[in-house]
Length: 409
Image 1 (cartoon, rainbow, N blue to C red):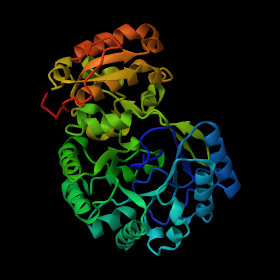
Image 2: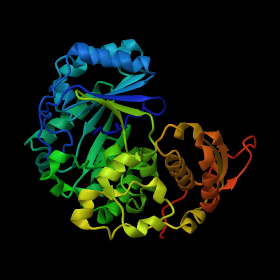
Image 3: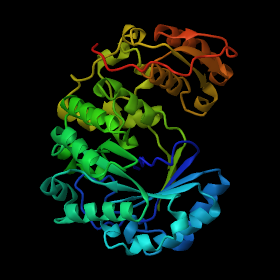
Image 4: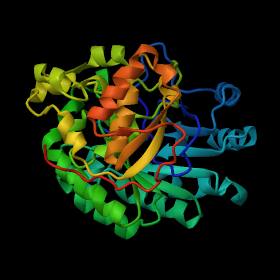
């Protein structure tokens, strides 16, 4: 399962993520990738990788993310990046643990003219050397990662940071944020993620933290980073129920609504599945009381392994009154055409509306309602119950909404 990249260049357009290889020079206990399944090749050949890139451009993908495994140990990484830029990808983001950047040789392989279109998302899972090295299973890797980040910064590349929240580091999220803000204020973004419960991680799932207690430190760390001008994102692997993201609701919704992210590795091409009812039915679970939640249809539930380990007592249903009371004075238009391709178009449309309420929007134009078919009236009812005033599509709306802060339910 892919990480979303935290790349500031990836704001609009279709995104393609390509895993070049399964190999890695670290042994993170939470890695969703693991070893390649039997019969699956451990890496793409250069010819295969370039064929994927060409197909992606033909299909209209504008932005490219390269990961693994660890892409910096892929022998032909430079050729792949340069070809991607030649093919017309607007930007390329390399997801890396940063150790391969430390010596600087890889960075020097990219001409200066490409440095505005090439960026790095570097995994840094703690600001404490001992914790970081324990999580990566690689003694001494913390220092090498910091050296790699500084090398990329010194060479003029845009970079962001990626942090997996675990049982070993969740309490220190505010301190981690302060460390980043002090030492790497130029970071384009910090992307947080909870672990993805891949099948091979049965033992490693002991690192999964309880979500309720982790919510407040995550929100505090996010606020600190945002106050220093750094953007905060949540990885697609970290999508959880909205009720367990107290204080970080807007960050979660921004991720849950990503519809244009396609992933490819040596096995298959697939979209991110987090608003897919079939995927959620196989992997997630809800409490009986969730049936009465105002956003139930737009929520996939909690991972089944998590429910088995911690139970379902943390899930707290929302009432429509909670959203009606969120402050808001601005207006926005929502184009429903982008929801039409989803298995249940009403679910992402509802999630989009909730995201707008958290942004302080209270007046709404609904565009292309026909894309929802018979569900359009249900969405209109949902919008009114969430606190929106629906206005005709041609009416001018204020572009400066008052943002809603977190509040108790």
